[in-house]
Image 1 (tube, helix red, strand yellow):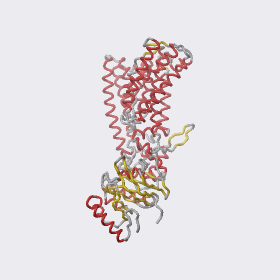
Image 2: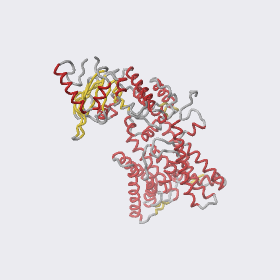
Image 3: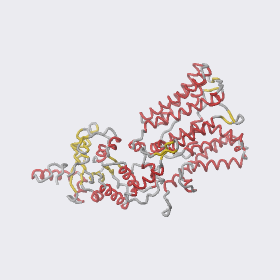
Image 4: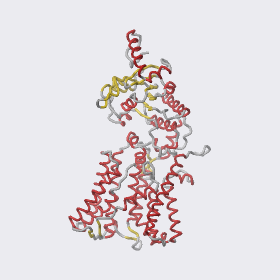
Length: 274
Length: 336
């Protein structure tokens, strides 16, 4: 199995006296979609903030390509190729498609003695990048982002991340606010990103959406990984039960312990063995 | 900026409301006051008002586009005027010392405003309300302490007078009009054609995303505050040179007048949307209402009513145009 692009080993995170994450072990490889499932408040957002450089882990090791890394700020995470796309696309509603695509990295050209923003290049590049993800309805780079549908905004944000060389794509609840059709567009884009060799971390609480694209699943309950399994190893009902937490959690722990006692795979939840 | 010109495309631009507002005001005063305001003497009167206001309104508008507000400009105008008058009038030092000091104080107060806004979570309205009063206090206190008066005379000759505070075109048009036109052109380039303009819009759209995209949001915020307070000090300094005296009071009207010009000009109060050309039109509209009333038979007390209605209509119109811009998508058969 190829080396993981991004891995978390025994990560703990606490804010003052409050422990938010306990002993998180996760890894994601190129061309693979890791689905991080969990109910609200399970700690998904904290995991995202660790990965995207907003917070630092209290203990444990975060590694890229096997080498330990530490991000001082989101910019450093981005420089390492980690891109985060938030629920609403994280884009600027009153900016044009071209301008928001290139925000902070605007292309310029010389016009006489003046270095000016190259609107045509920005618009053409942005439109082409979004269309390559199958969103052909965006064909005018001057359109305002706020006029796009939720799915189109996600597509724009993902296309932007890929265009600027992201290797790990973190999608934070990309389908939560979308209708069925829009959500299926976004899932298709996730598959396209995977096909292009990106490592995708897909955060959701919608089991159906996770199952449609995921290769590898981790369920977070109260800040700990309650289950870690690969595609086809669990049914939708089982996953939903898992996410629901509480009673099932005890059952699961007993199950894992019996596995370990029997020594047939799953020595501990996170280290995955086929 | 627009690849093709059509009425629809025009209406979707931020300055659409400002342009229509300007037309409406011109028609209104054309009917009730004749075309006096378009004749040289009439034009000079509103252009003088617009130029002094416009030099301040544009940086105030940029701050609004970036999601901030600066009301301390109201104190920076008398501060700039008094600095040059005390240094070069009261103490009789060379005028260039006074000019340099006035502009330096503008930069200093801008740095203080900007630094306080980025270091504290206090809204910039409150921060600059604080500096507004603090600077007013400094101006009044120091002036009375040094000169035992609230009005200081200043006489300027030579190049400084010609460049900063003179009349031309038959002694009616202030040299500030030329400054205003040149500065507006520079801002149009900076905001709409250079890459930095994009940063300002991004900051007003979503500051966190802008920072994550690598935009130096803190440095830009400080720069914008420095621009606005230095511009206000510049206007005050030029007025002192023009009128040969400076008063500790005055300048307060610039606060609301600048905000009105900016909002009539199509800038969204919550940031992220607007244009320099819009602010330019908004300033002219305000100045024509402010001065045009003198050419009608109306009592001038009615001008505030007109400005109030104008502001409300402009905001409603700008909201409509912004919605049009948002919901716009090209026709299916459109040629690319």
